[in-house]
Amino acid sequence: MLHGCDLRTVRQEHPDCFELITNADIVKVNQDSAALPPRLVRQAPPFPGASTGEITEQVFARPLSGNRTAVLLLNRAPHALHMNVSWAELGIGGAT
Image (tube, rainbow, N blue to C red):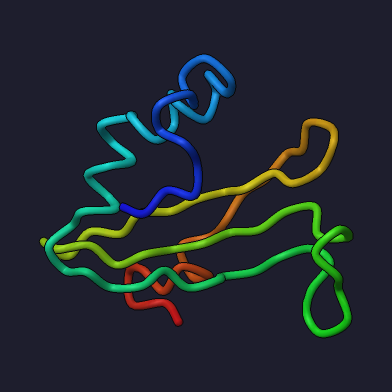
């Protein structure tokens, strides 16, 4: 796992970030032996044309070893969102 922060001070200066980078489940996904990249399932607003600052939600999926899949629903909006993803969007269960 690569970090672009000063690990000597991140705990004090950015405790929320420290909790994420030391979360055992997140580390397990990052270090999974399949070593496959995640894919962007969808985002709002959709590409093309959306700038980084305009994106409010993204869904990522990453294949893991043992025929498992990690899914990330990322709220980039300044407020709470109701987010979901279907099995078909993830390509799970024979759906494509």
